[in-house]
Length: 265
Image (cartoon, rainbow, N blue to C red):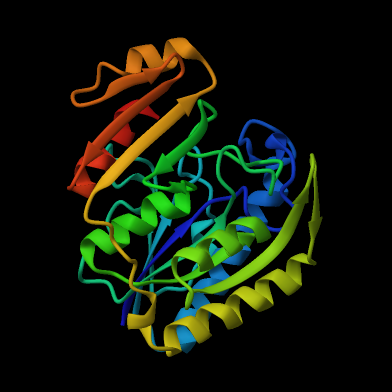
C-alpha cells in the first residue's frame, strides 16, 4: 500500500504564536521537532496498517522543516516548492491508496485557532461553493480530483470538526483547541500516541468511505484584507471583481481552480 502524507506546523500540539512557526525565530526549533514527531507517528501508524511506501510532503513555509533522519526508511520526503498548482499535495496522483493530513489548522476567518489562515495572510476568507475553505478543503478536493480517499487528519479541534462535516468517516485527532489568542493543548507525547493509533485505524478501515465528494461546479470567492490585492488579482483570466476587496472565479474543472489559487493567494 502506497500512501501520501502532507504536513503543516500550525496544527501541531503547542503551536500558538507565529514566532513558533518561523524558521528565523528561536522558538521554531521546538515546534520543528514536534512537527517531525507527529509526522513520524503517522508514518508508523501507516506502516502498522500495511503501508509499504510513504510519500511525505513538507508543506509549511519554506517546505524545509521536517528532520529527514527521523523518518522511517520507507518514507520519501518532498521538500521545497516546485511551482505546481497542487502545492501542499504536489506529487499526489491516482497511484496512492490514501491521503493523510498532519498538523493542519483552521481556515482564514475562523476563531478556532490563533494561527488560523488559508495559504497566506492575505485572505479574510475563501469560499468554495457554500463552504468556507481551509487548506484541508482545498487539498481535499485535489484528492477527490485524482480519486484518492482522504482518510486521516490531525490538527486543531475546529478543523477536525470541519473535516468531518465534509467526510464523516475521516479519522481525526484534535491535538489542541484555540481560545481567542491562546490554545489548550494535549501533551506532546499523547499527541504522538493518538496520531500513530489514528493513522493505523484509518488505513485499516474501509478507505472507500473517505472518498471526497466532488461538486460538479466550483464557484470560488476570495475576500482579501486589502482592496488593492483584490483589484490586482481580479485581472487573472476568468476572475472578476465582485466588491472592493472580493474576487470571484468559476470552473467545472478543479485543476483550473487550483491554477487560479496558485496565482492569487
